[in-house]
Image (cartoon, rainbow, N blue to C red):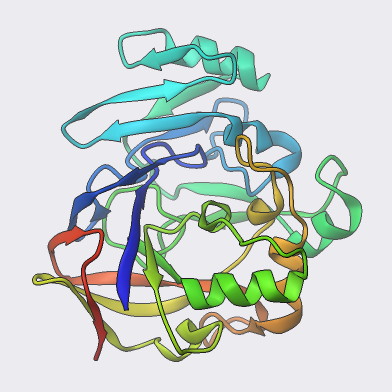
Length: 275
């Protein structure tokens, strides 16, 4: 396997950026999901997992993080930095009072719409929404859904594209991974067999796969110029409905979550070995 792409998302649920290389520590890729918006009406973390309220987050792109200055690009071409009145501008754009935060609140939660209901009723319809805790597989104070690193293979992306039958590749952007791993000669959803195993990435980094990644409605949504695509969830719901961890029942899964066993640098093009 080869590292095809390295991605980070400085602000949770906004579009992110592709990096040529990155440092990966216990909290994941440096600068990844270190910031989020807090909904001032509910005190919950803003997430496009509740698309009826927050799908507009995927019209915003955040770049920078760690030692690099944050920049948020808006749909109209404007850009915000931390010196601007970010909270006021984003509150107006999103239609709800929000605040940009860098500290994870105690007991932080977000709203997650049930994806099957979103598929059936559409992103604008009222559906069942579950309050979901953040970071259950991480000890770091970041805004990750579960564990610090999220990865997906090209084998899985290619299998989804094949089953969708559109003749178009599936853009990894829909699944928001940190690492896209290029694979050859392996079946789709190969990550299903990796839980509990280690990945050695390049010369330094070692990751331990701890869970499969259950999918929400986010992959189906428009991401910037990338149009909405319901098959991004329908296909894994049909082909890979499995239990992401033993205590949960079967759910549509794409990719896997990992914790960091040994920190290190990762470069695009690094070789990856599964122990």
